[in-house]
Image (cartoon, rainbow, N blue to C red; front, side):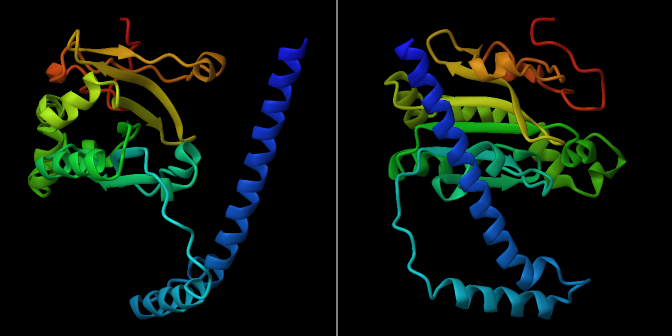
Length: 248
């Protein structure tokens, strides 16, 4: 009975914390919307002016102290994604956005800096449903956007390079770092199909959490492959073809 009461209090505290955080976001967004987001078809000059006005007001307030950054995320730059609904306050996240969320050599170096200098403990490599960058790379537009197409096609190879890097590999083996792959459901920002890399077996292992078991996602995707290189097995996980269960 005592343990159940503690659990109830803990859940109530989390609920209250979420409500206060959402209220703070609404207040902040309201302030920002007055300066920019509610402008009707703004010109570049209006946007810059409003940003500078907002910045002047914001810098009149004390800046919050810098705290530890335990999370780095590589994800698509699609503006429909709201990462605050996954990670909360993004001030505590090294957020690396590019078309598709592709891992590239300079991204690998950035992640090494994040681990060594920022104290990052978890790296998330996230794709998302209905990704326009993937659609471009697999369509007639591929020739118009050759760099994006190359980034998508070489993503798996560079994921393997990331996992083989001595800094990343050593931190994982010393249990100081986890590298997790997953997919964001674009319409809801739900994080599904999580896989954590195990260097001992050289496999991606399913990451199970009670929250996912309690709220199973309606979208099922390919698993990211049995080896760190993926072998292309996660290709086609988006809307271009029927999605499959990881165990199919």
